[in-house]
Image (cartoon, rainbow, N blue to C red; front, side):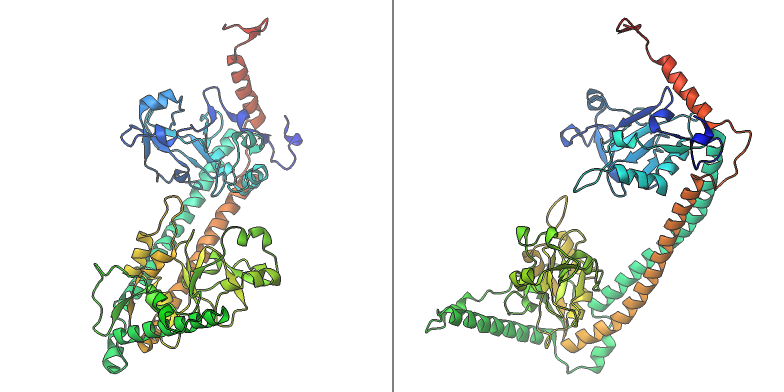
Length: 526
């Protein structure tokens, strides 16, 4: 293969498939099919998983093991330091890193991680790892991906991709330059990440301070006659019951079943009881209240969206009535998100799931526990099954206060996550939400807390967003560096470098000479 046959490549480069790069003692295999029943927490062989494979970095996260005996029984491939690991499942698909851990027969990997073992005399491992992580090859991987719910790439499809390979000396120069540039970028990223974590901690500190009653101590001293939490709680509970009775009476009248006596009032659903143990002390004017106690007594004041076949993704369209899902509920604020819609006809069918202006929204699946307030000027919309909406009586309660409260790492949010159900995909349900304990103060103080916090949180969020922009810029710059590297624009080409096709022919020749020859249908080794 000559250089001019490889259009667009620098002189002495060539395109090659992974199998053409594997030396005689190399490896290009999937990981091993190690099931849960094969694992042993006391085993001396560690099972490397998808979570360990970062985008260019080995993350070293997992803690699964099996015995050496079981690894031999399963015929596992033991990893070596310097092996290239390619994730065959998201996210992102095809991410790649160098395995750094040393130790003979101490590590194996799961089947969804592909293992590539090269040698310094064939292809520089870090060159190939950087190449697989480059925008060019990620684009090729996307072309060969398969699967409907979770995309993946098979090793067979991975082997079809033709890779731009530089001469070995140039590979080493490219790796050195990438490492140099990435090192500088990583220092900046590390500083930005630390700053972001500090802002996150400061945000939580401000929220915690507020909902312990410390932020408005001065306000309470100046406003001693504004009321106390317990009095407000009783008013809310009284209005909650009145609203329920009003709605229930109207329903019974419509159905023609309103009895002469008031026995039907006994069916009033009392609020969920919440666990009062280990609740921290509050200011004397405050009290603890369960989330279910502050929900309006009007029908459907706390509910999630339609389940199952009642609303399918295939029914979403570009225009019509807005559908609010997880991506609309951010960390404390509403986002227009992907703007899914349904037809007017479908809306009439699902009108009972309509989001009311001023409702508190809580995500109960996937990105768990995010909250926001439905904008009061939002067009009509419905919610999806992954979102709960909570309506409260706004003349007595201030929804923005509770929105901020449920973002804080206080007992309210801690219990939310502690009680979440499910191993692989934890979720929340109405019982968990209704039993959340919330610190309650008078409405005027709720407004004061939300007002003071909003400016603090807003400033923190702006600074965090600026950091996110810089982190995204650093990631984009890394992609640009990789793109330049594998189009031959990062380092100079040297005339003395051996053309890469000579290297490829040498690898091919070594493998062919080592392969057993066949005589009359049998190998010579038979």
